[in-house]
Amino acid sequence: MAAKKKRKTTLHHGRRRGARTKVSAPIVRRAANHSAWLIPTRWVKFVIAIFLLPICAILTQTFFTVFARATVTQRLWAAEEFWFFSLGAVLWLIAFFGLPRPMLVYVFGHELTHALWVLLMGGRVSRFRVGRDGGHIVTDRNNFWIALAPYFFPLYSLIAIAGYGVLGMFFNVQPYGRLLYALIGATWAFHFTFACWMIPKKQTDLTDHGTFFSLVVIYLMNLALLSVMLVLASSQISFADLGREFVANADKFAHWLTSL
Image (cartoon, rainbow, N blue to C red):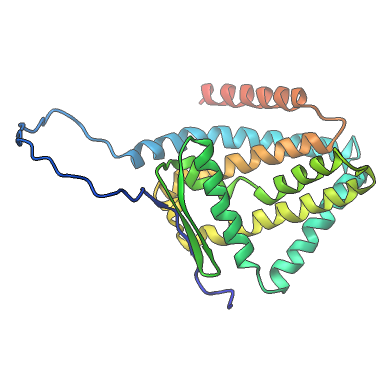
């Protein structure tokens, strides 16, 4: 299928209900309350996104500072985990730009991520449909976490990690640790490239909750995930180190803000 063809993975909401007996009730008309203000939720989310921008900036500075320190002073670039992760990512990039894109695999993972987050939020999934031209789920619950989850939740990377852990309970999989890092690199690159490729295609997942708000949340969550991966990949970096750097950068930002 041509790569330029637009494909939509639409998240449908609502449950089919059985027929019910209608009960007539008297209609009560109330005078409109002109003093009440009705603020669209998109406006509220837009304001929230503006307040999230400083957090994005602070976390970005924190990530690149810690990454540069680990690369230069702690020789992260020389670790085999880094090289095999990078190898997997590069191999996927070659496949993404040079081979037919596995749309069915992507759409399945996209809709499965929606479904998993519906279940995490206590909802129900009554229909799950996947095809090469798109897919959808029918559910009784919807919020921005469910809608945006496929853009920051690397499902296939987590499946690879979980599979490695399960196999490790029965077999000695330690010699295949390099393969795991390569798989994580390839699957995370799969997640990242498809997310970047689909975002400009006016997905309803983003527009339903406001595109600006959605993009800020997606960026922040992906950066947080990268920060966690950086800590796990480097034995010299701990979550405490990352937290201290974040607090220091937040303090610098606060001083800069008060000096304006």
